[in-house]
Image (cartoon, rainbow, N blue to C red; front, side):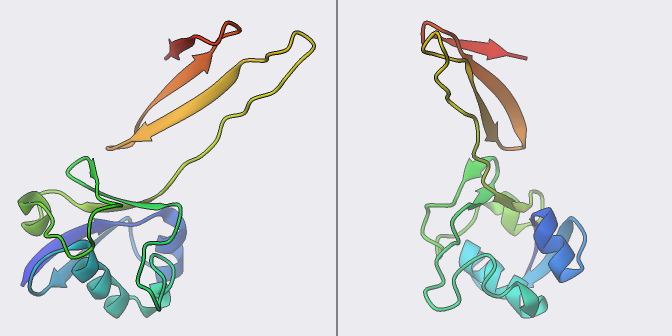
Length: 138
């Protein structure tokens, strides 16, 4: 049995009545699937919120991160890194972030802003100037 740390998004914490980080007992191979099984067993109100109840596929706009790597498209049965298995690092379940805009103006182009978010929740802003080139913003 492994004690696995999991962080879930704010709206799911509210639904479950849980804190930011949850510690779960996971038996057998520690994978995204086994962690979600343990999470849903402990918090049944989360069934169907992270993955489809019938297909068990990840819901759109949710992502899984382990050791600063995106595990969203890995096989759910694939064993998680030892740092997660032994509780040194949490498995992060985060809501995907989309945004930015593109608008045409009288001059034909208005600046567009794009946010890029990556683990562990670092961010940078990128601006597209009128010539279509990218500029880093702080």
